[in-house]
Length: 231
Image (cartoon, rainbow, N blue to C red; front, side, top):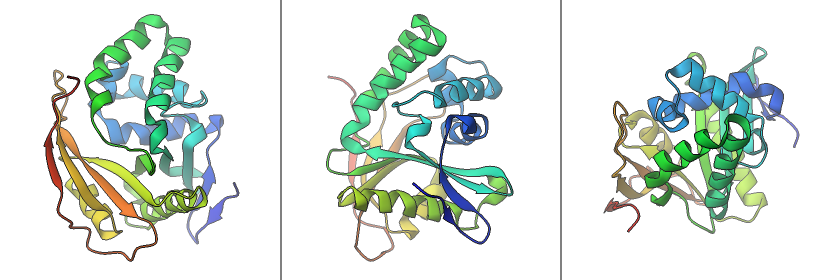
C-alpha cells in the first residue's frame, strides 16, 4: 500500500519500527483498562508492553493491521482495522503473542481478565471493523481522524464489505459526536458487566456505517442491550 498525502500529513502502512510512537497512541484509547489487562503498573510500562506486542504479526494490536498518520516526521494518528469476522481469531493471537513476549503467566492473566470483554458484541461478520482510531492531542481538529477513517472505509470497499463498524466507550462523548458527524449510527448500546478496581469502563456504543450512503447526522435509533456476558 502506498502512502496517501495531505498538505500537512501523510498516511502510511505501519512497520515494526513504528512501535514506540504507535503504542503511545494505542494507549490513549485504552487508558487504565490497558494497564489492568496487561498487568502493568502505569502508563509507561503499558506503552512499553504495547510496543513489544505491536511488532508481532497477526494479532489484534499488530502493526500488520495499522495505518499511521505522520506529520513533521512524527506519528500523530493511528487506525487499526480488519474484517469483523476475524475479531475472535486476532484476539486469540494477541494472547499467544503475550505468551511469546512475556511468558505463559502474562498470557493467562490477559485471557482471564479480558474474558468478560470477549463476549461483548462489538463486531460482526460481513463488516469491516475499526478496532482503534486515535490522534495525538496536539494534532486534533486537522482532519487526521477523518482521513484515517476514510482510509479504513476505502479498504473495506476494496474487500467488498458493505459496512464499517466500530465501538466507542460510553463516556467518550466527543468521539461519539465525531463518528455521528461522519455518518456512523449507533446500532447498539452495550452495558458491560466487566468490573475491575480503578478501571473506568462500563460499556460502549456499537456504531455502523453503510458504505456508499450519504452522510447523515448519525442519530439513528439504537438497541439498548444490558450485556450479561458468558452464559
